[in-house]
Length: 472
Image (cartoon, rainbow, N blue to C red; front, side):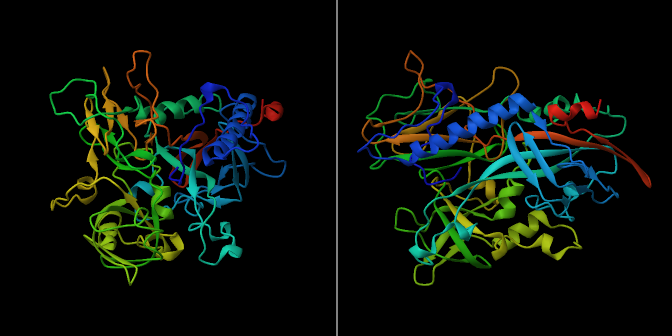
């Protein structure tokens, strides 16, 4: 998550059961957050072991949590209730396909409309960071209406999605649906990308596999570097971006007028603000939620821009192009029936903001703006970030590795050791690691087969173990 963290220390392989405070010691954000992570890991692992990968408590007077019903060719209803997906509790107040709270679906998008052939309805579950900008009630007004934010929140996001199956496809049942979904959705992202981090001098194209020796990390401050996939795909099409602040430098947007963006603030100071030449990403609730696509090769929803000018007195920044034009050109090639579904990025109710990234790359005037402001994923060589920090994407031995948009790796860099905090082999070589996040969880809900004016619907949810005898 893009929080202002010193580092993220939880690792289930260490088998820690609690974080214990000692008197007279400094308390760090990482330790408090690790205690929360330990507890969540224990509770969710226990729930998954007892209930399986996905289960729901049936209701005596209805379908129970996330039951699919009322299909009419354009939408379907989702029943209120609860479901546990890999131990993560999901709660629904009752909705339909188009109005689900974190779906941000658009009837004008062909990919969002329900297929005319058989399809699978499934649940995608993940967690996102929510700050005081997205949820103002987090802020304590006693510290001032515009006072500093204190903590952030982690929110469980569930999204009801559809997977087209095509005519003649096999019909999964309740017992086989989870594996069927895993093979059709999760398998798209395997094998995952691998990354290693180290310190050293930047190498040229023909240098060896190990970074050259150097004084190590040369930055003036401790940092938490974040390397994040911007455009998904394989090496050659995938791109990445990086931040020395874990992507936590976020500037809330008041309004967007052409390429001019009015901000609530220009940042707390020069280090945590925005300046001419910075690469920024314009995001809002819709863009963040729509970014969780199950297509690894789909272009990113967030757009990258270069700051051309900063008006400190007016709290405005001038971007290198019009965000509203980009948004409509990319997403809105159709006429829409629902005005609220095609609001531009930057509308206040979506909590728009600029996120600063710290890589610098020249833009090109070739009509593909975001790819030119992110960096190409190049496997098999060390790529410099800054101040001696380097990363390496590792290639696969057979099938090419696939990078999912939003995959990220965290790299703490420390002045005292002049190095990055990264695991090494016994021979001292930096180990390759799968992405630290974002973890996605999946649960099948229903199979729907449209048949003209009629349809066939098969419920694929698994009830809780102590209630399964009612169904068999």
